[in-house]
Amino acid sequence: MQTKTISTAKFPELYYRLSGTGNVIILLHGFPLNGTIWDDVVTKLSLNYTVIVPDLPGAGQSSFHGTELSIEDMAESVKAILVNEGIKNAVVAGHSMGGYAAIAFTDLYPEMVAGLGMIHSTATADTEEKKEQRRKSIALFEKGGKDTFIKQMIPTLFAEQNREKFKEEINSLTEQALLTESKSMVAFYNAMINRPDRTNTLKTATMPILWIIGGNDGIIPPKNLIQQTSLANVNFVHTHEGCGHMSMMEVPEDLADNIKSFADYCFNKAAH
Ligand code: MLT
Image (cartoon, rainbow, N blue to C red; front, side):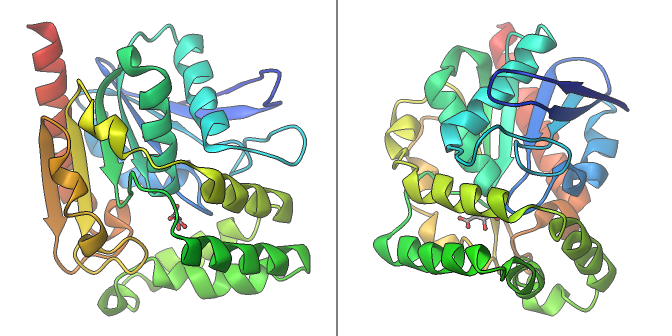
């Protein structure tokens, strides 16, 4: 694995990992995590593909100027990395908040997307209720409550029945998430509040869409996704029963297989 850091006007540091050779898959992490969540999946996918894993701006080892960030800014960070690598198109897959960035990228640069992966993610905007919940959390982050929030939140990313089994992973994710600045936590939540509904992107998509659903995902439950998974022309849908919001850790082998078959299809189709 190589690691690189580039700099743009908006992002003083954009850190990413690059492994393998061949056609490109880029994997975007969710909130409040960083690219290391994909480690197990990358080990497998990089046998057949070039796999790029950024830390999104404000997460892990990447940063942004100022205090505000949008989901479109995250998409621009992906563009900057692909341009830096001279990559014309890729399978772009995102986990949860990373999926919001992946679909925004698809909206902005459809010609660069060989396939879009929505991993425990949704094309819909936040409901008013969700926005209100996020605003309360933002008030908490601003009052120094970030750490309490993170310690409560991370275990809920895993299916309840998996929390004991993944105790070490939960502790490690918590430790890493605690390093996220309050400024980033606020910016991520505002970015998610402000993101538009992108179901139309699915309806008009010219590329195949991959859906990964956790049967026991408490953050983005299956019932919120069923309708979306038939909006595009070509959909690959995998529901993992007994899995929460973290298939890349709860069922990494299965997820790597799902992404590999999807990428095989997307790049084969592009070649014909
Ligand atoms: C994530 O996992 O990225 C976030 O929890 C998604 C969200 O809050 O909508």
